[in-house]
Amino acid sequence: MLSPGKGKRRKGKPIVVCIGGMAGSGKSTVARKLAEKYKLRYLSGGDALKALAVEEGYKFVGPGWWESRDGMRFLEEREKDHRFDEAVDRKLLQMARKGNMMLDSWTMPWLLEGAFKMWLEASPEKRAERIAGRDRINFEEALEALKRKEKQTKRIYEELYGFKLGEDFAPFNFILDTNDLNSEEVFRIMCMVIDNVVFKS
Image (cartoon, rainbow, N blue to C red):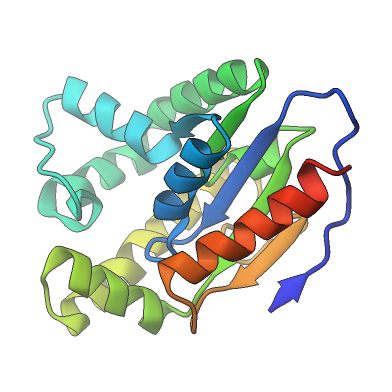
């Protein structure tokens, strides 16, 4: 599914692009590639939260950390204490205002004004399939971890900011269904959108 952009960047304004999407949608992969292509600084809300987790004594073991025991334990701590998420969002907002940024974030589409915002959509089953392949775990385990994590994450952001992650698409200029697309196809489509909407507006 493609949805047309609802706003265009005015000439002369610094470029800020937000990429959103649930775990396994491909948002981090494509955001990094887009940042490299367009020479934008890449900022990740997830990476910033992981850095705070390490400071708190959690062990980070690479891809799939959020679905690990430590990742889920940190998620539970975030549910009880929102200071981690609030600190990350303050920092992302501060950095984004400098312009020329590619933001990989669940919150910035709602909190940041003036950015071009894109959402990658995919079914829970397709996302679990991708996560299972990435983390070398079975599909059922990946799907269960995904559902548990997303239920808690949605609760955090609804309590903090009042939006429903993965259900409220009001802030987005462009939505792409990635169910039947590979990462290279997603990248090419996103490039077309940025070239023809963001840079030509």
